[in-house]
Image 1 (cartoon, rainbow, N blue to C red):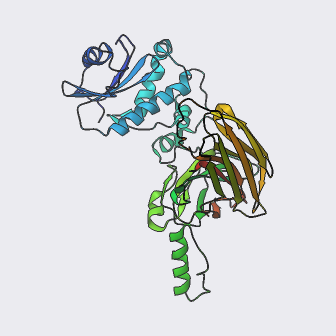
Image 2 (image 1 turned 60 degrees about the horizontal axis):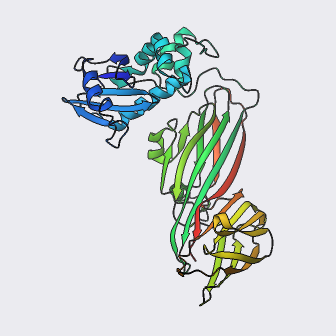
Image 3 (image 1 turned 135 degrees about the vertical axis):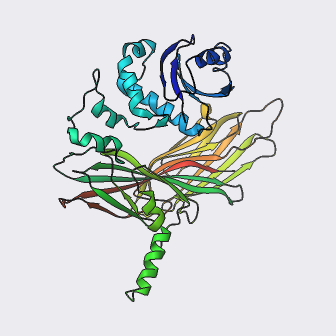
Length: 436
């Protein structure tokens, strides 16, 4: 693994170094200084990895300092760079976001202690800032509560470093936000060229102790499994339940992936406060919030363009969209535009080369029309208009385009306290474009 970590300044002088294996010496810094720093390769497109004299140098920069990892083995570069980025993040937490060479020199003892805690014999160890602050508190960093000595070993070496013990709340609450972005590209004939939803599940937990949570979505595989079990057990049929086919998903490191692989249940001990539980992507059976039907006609003499646009809201009439902005492109030589629209405000904005239609509140199941007569200035060399796509922005609260919804959140704790749960859904436009 990693044989040595060095921090050098822009002159190539070693500010601090820590040797974890004896197959690399400090003299290797001279090779790095001559081949990278003196040659000014770090500021070019040469790449952050160099191999000199059978030694691999993996480095990144922070202001005028080089954080360099040295190794003679075939390491995973992604792991090494993740460690270097985490190292910089830890130093920012202790020394400030804009720590420099002087701050490094004035905190040598602290930095050596951090180097010993975050790596052992070349293998990255505990890089969680919250846990490190409990035990390494030189300078102004003080832990909120002094840890009990008997718990030091279990907290440092244990698997749960994202949550400390002894957390207490008068009211136990969990806030869940399901945020989705709809990406759509519609062809000129109305055919769908690209259509997908990317979503995140954000949580804000205010729970006492070390609870275990079980979280469930209307995942198609889980629903089908429950339907099959219900049919075999002879109970009431649950075939009317439908699920959403989630293509791929990534989780926060607190989720027990073994249990998810086995039975698709999301089980975890949550961090305290806000965190992102998971990301997912859906590409099938997407309910598009808006249907937009454009009709654009150019006159033969290229002096006028007629635009007609129909917008239909596909979501329930009990909901409404906010911050709806529709940008309808017009030719560059547009002189003026006469616009009529059913509601909202629309005007020609020359700096955007588009008619911008803004609607603060768009009701569900509503239909609205916009018509515009665009006058064009004559040009010496007429050029064909390339017709950029219509861009749409919107936000629809309590609606998910993918159909994903939270089925349950169960909180298990030794004391058995009651937990209040709050769920909110928001769908936004990602790249929502309609070609004309």
